[in-house]
Length: 399
Image (cartoon, rainbow, N blue to C red; front, side, top):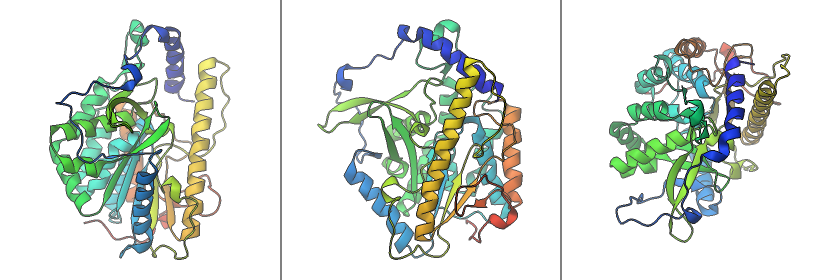
C-alpha cells in the first residue's frame, strides 16, 4: 500500500477528533434568500437521479444513439482516480499518436476523469492541454497541507491549487468550443454527488456551455471542482439549485465517484435487451484511472493501514461490479466494451501528485496507447486486464 494513502488516512483520523469544532455554515433548510441578481441557467444542465422524467429522457437519447444512429456510436467513459488521471491523459495522447483514436459521440467523466473529459471531448487538438494539466508539474502544490489547527475545516487539504488548475483551463473559449460540438449532437456529461440528497447528479455540460457568459463559466468550473473533491480530502463545493417548489437552495456537492466509479451506460438502460442489436462497430471505452486487479500484500497492523487497504479493496470491488453490469448490457445488445487501466504491479497512488511520478504515469499510458497496447476487449467475466495490440478494434481516426 502506498505510504501516501496510509499517511492521508492517519491525517484524516486526526482531523475527525477536531471535526466538531469547524463546519460549513448552511442556511436553514438549505434555502437561500432569493436575490434578484442571482443567476439561474435558462435550461437546467443537471439531471438528478430522482428526476425520473429527465433520467428517462437521457436514457432515451443514449438509446437512440445506440440503436438508431446512421454511424456506429462510440462512448468514452473516464473514471475517477486522483493523481492516476495522469495515466488516462497519457492514454488519450498516445491514442492520437497511434492514428486510431475515434471521434466520440458521448464523453463522460467522474472525479479526475471530469477534469480530463472536456479535452477528450474536444479531440486531439486539445492534447497539449491534457499534457499540461497532468504531466508538466502543475499538480505540485495540489495537496497543500493545512496547519494542524486548520484540520477543523471540512477538508484536510486546501482546494486553492485545484481551483487555480481548473480556472486556468476552463476558459470562455473552451466553453465556446464545447457549445459548438453540443449543437452538432455530441454530449459531454460530468457526474457529481449531491450529499444532501444522497444521489448522483449528471451535468450536461454542453447545455451549460451553450448558455455562455461569465456565470456559465463559473458554474462549469464549480461542477468540475465538485466532481474532483474527494470528501474529507478537499472541501465540498456548494452549488445553488432550484428545488421542487421553485426555491433557490444550496446543495453540497462532492466527488462523483462516491456513488459511481464511471458513467458508462445509464442505469435505467442496463437491464434492457432490445430486439435489434447495435450497429456493427458500436463501442463503449472505459478508461480506468487506476488498477482493477486484486493485489496480494501483507497489510500493516495499524489503523491507517487497515482503513486504507479496506478502502482500496472496496473501491476495486465496486469498479469490477460496474464493469460487469456494463459488460452484460454490451454483450446482450451488440456493443464492444474496451477497457484501459494501469497495469497491476505498477506503483500508483491516487494521492501521489508528485510531478515526476505523474509524468512517469503519463508516459506509461502514452507509450502503451501509441503502441496499440492500452486497450483490452472484455468478454465474459471481468478479468484481470492484460492488454495487447490485438485488443484495439478497427476505428475511424478523428479529424
